[in-house]
Length: 117
Picture 1 (cartoon, rainbow, N blue to C red):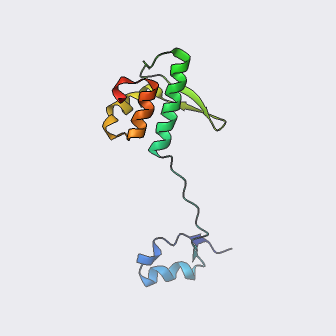
Picture 2 (cartoon, rainbow, N blue to C red):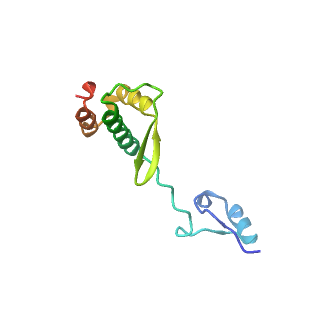
Picture 3 (cartoon, rainbow, N blue to C red):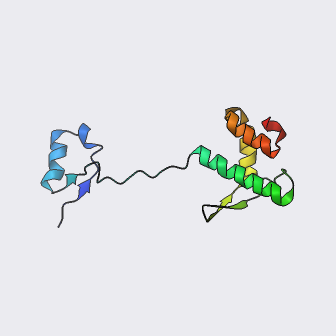
C-alpha cells in the first residue's frame, strides 16, 4: 500500500506524538506543490458583471427596465449559458446601492436606472 499524503496546514500546531503517528503509518505531509490549488471564487464583481449583462440583454429585448422579481434571464458568457435571477439581483442591487462603487453605479446609470445616478 502506497503512503498517503495529508495536508500539512494543521501539523504545525500538533504535538510531537501527533506528528509522529501519521509518519509511522506511512502517511507523509504534502508539500505545497502537491496540495490541490484553491478553487477560484467567483467574487461579487463577477456576479455584478453578470447582472449588468443580463439587465442590458433584458432591456434590449423588452425595451424596459421593469423586471418582475421572479424573472430569470439566460445569458451566454464565454460560450456557456448561465441563468441570472435578474429580478432578485436588481432588487438586491438597488437595496445595497450605498455599497456600490462609482464604476458600478455608472454602469447601472448608463443602462437608464434613475436610482443609480
